[in-house]
Length: 164
Image 1 (cartoon, one colour):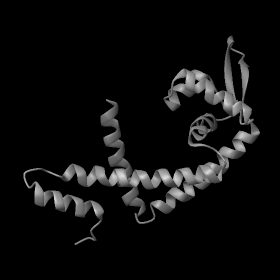
Image 2 (cartoon, one colour):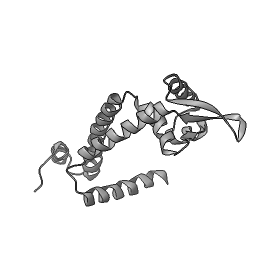
Image 3 (cartoon, helix red, strand yellow):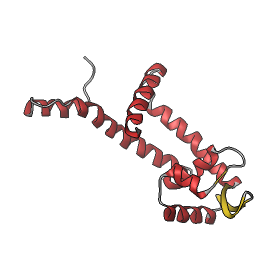
């Protein structure tokens, strides 16, 4: 048998106390919750070492993923980061203050602005993504490539069920 983890011990205790219940959801989701905490700690450490906050990462990485010229409208940033417009305005202001982004007039609509990643912002986000990929690969080192592919497929299937 495989080595037992803390979730196995918790589920085993519940099975003893409540044998009438199916605890298989806990076997999956409790592990996901515990792994999520490890991932959150690792990501926060990466961002700290990159001198950015997690919310800054959300905005900067959205701009970087957009490709050259690394700009999006505030509305596009809202859609990608799932925050309110007031929160996004505050975030953009703070990133402008750190010189990671700048606001530019939208040449296609003079009433609108585009948020553009600066060279400093691009350097910062590129360093962070390099660290993040390395740290996350380390977190998954116990899994083979085929295990990771299978897990990604199953998690995608579960994620899509929430979106439908």
